[in-house]
Image (cartoon, rainbow, N blue to C red; front, side):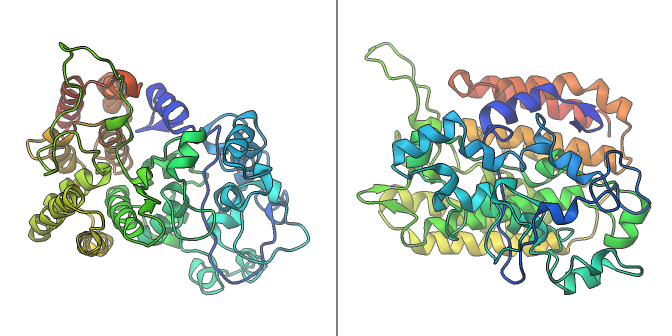
Length: 451
């Protein structure tokens, strides 16, 4: 899939290996209301089932992209089948769930649900059209009628995915988690073999893109602002994470914290009894916790702080203080609910501010510099945050190409620098913080030369 107008094999390796997206599901919730009509209701050759994308208004080959058997574009259609795979069976057996294809803990994100179903609906379709666009019974017939508008479709129940906050809420309900049944991946699930959840809203939207952002699209829904989508996604991820952590039944599992919320590789490192060994753990300047304490996964907090300092400098210091207080509360007590609520509120305020901000011509360049700058770079001490930083640089490069700020050829000239940053996070067990920070700086400098 081209990112920044270019193939990015290192990106695909990262997504397929570290995230296991194409092999092991993804998904999103549906909003309540209406009936699920199933993928078959969208698949006619005069609708979205063409073999070639040559429709006059929309491509009309959307089903073919959704069904792609090997690329990230087809991951949603493979979500249910993944439950019946050898890996899915092993996970279900370890957790005593019964068949994974019938387990509520799995189907929440590996299939479309949340509403009554019509006669053409098939659970085996996996994450179908209505998982993201909403139950179609009320808007299906009207959305292709002569004179139909996007506003009318939304009024009848179609989900307004063109609005960044709504898209973030829909995608992150499975690509991070929610309190809805079957929408939360526990540490027990990951111990049984489920891949770690990692997500970046704009980059994954590009990987799943089955629409043309042409003049007709802009007339219906307005031009896309990829920088805004990225920033809103970071804010929603932080808000959702700490809100769930503070929700009874999610922040802890018996005596232990729910380790899903923590930085995996701060604990999952090689153990050896060697008196001369060097510490792999680096002290993070933004996390005031005792040495050796498992840190809360702050990958989105780091990026959200960078965005706040660029787009909302008046609120940035308050957000940083709330994040530090949250980490400090975890290091000193068992239930930092007040600190979590304060941080969630700060993130929600930034999310609303980002969603309302006008487009800024140099925003992507400024953000790249901020992410790799003095305030943020020392915080990239852990694998998860570093992965998020690489995805940020790539999605911002993509935004620059989309906005016409740089050409595809110019982006091609620096692709090697971006791929070196991807290579630095290719394998978590060999992750080296100083080497990663050097690769990130080189990639950011390469992008900056195009300004």
